[in-house]
Length: 442
Ligand code: IFM
Image 1 (spheres, rainbow, N blue to C red):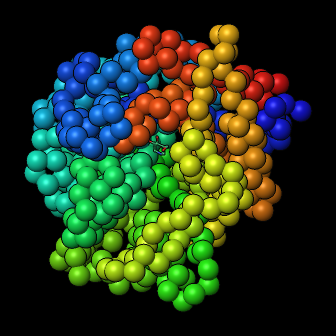
Image 2: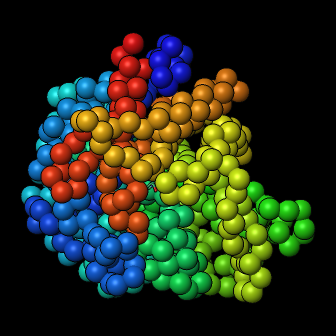
């Protein structure tokens, strides 16, 4: 038995073990002709990001991608989930940057040379600032802009990637960024949020159509699901929880797989949706080949009172990570079986992200992270349980390969299997990396 409590033999034949990152969080946006994204401008505005940190340098992966791929291969991972920075490929949202395309071309070839299967994500939050100027996700045209970008980037690498996701975490793209205001563009506006909630799905559907037209397959979308627990059983608390669950977990899956929006969310958003929204479902429902689920934690919901949707969160009693996120592995099992039963049926499901932030530090050239090892052990066990219950789970990607730019929290929330010293950019595999390696290579 390994530190993670499993070996490959404990999972079905062909199960894909991978790790994940995203472009803006690791590459270094100041290199290679990358244009400004709305994350650069958001971070440059006081109060938005801890210590006003941005992704200009990040982990310098743009220059260090080869040793970084070696780390993935040495751990024994089968696959790498990475994303392309839209602003690197199209710096002003229109003009194509050949240097940017060449970078992703080299990266994909580098993976194949190391027997790592490339799992690409088209959008992990780096909207070109020029498109943000035009209203970004509030503007219906974003679906066409995204379709053009999809065609551009997939014409370059689509022949060699194993699988492609359109959007990473549409809830974050839309709700967190346009209603809660915690991510770029930092809006707190229900009309903006409703439009983003719809347009992100339309963009997803258009991208799927474009890729099908190019003869590409193995296409999916990556949703983040989060446990939602009402703190008590008062009717107003239950109602707030139902709205939270509808906005967070049901909205996107219901649109893609059922062609409808959940009632508990629509009751507040419908007046703010763009005209004719119902007519977009045939596009939004463009068939996908798999579903990606990112899972980290659960939240305890209270009724905040005031205007709809009256959702607020309160700390719970479970063990916490450095982000104060509660650790609740059974919710992963629950969501995997729930998503298959309610929405995706027999389609392959992947855990496209799972991991935790730690207060990790170097000690005599090592980086002990026992909490992460336990976290991964318990979540891999939950995944095995979901498989035993009949869920078609086909792979699991640990977030993240290395410490990186954790968006509004800056650089001190460390999610990596590999420690990064952000002064020297030196990489040091943590104990969890060695534990993964032992599990995958045993
Ligand atoms: O770092 C993020 C990632 O970009 C999207 N999913 C959640 C991770 C941890 O917060």
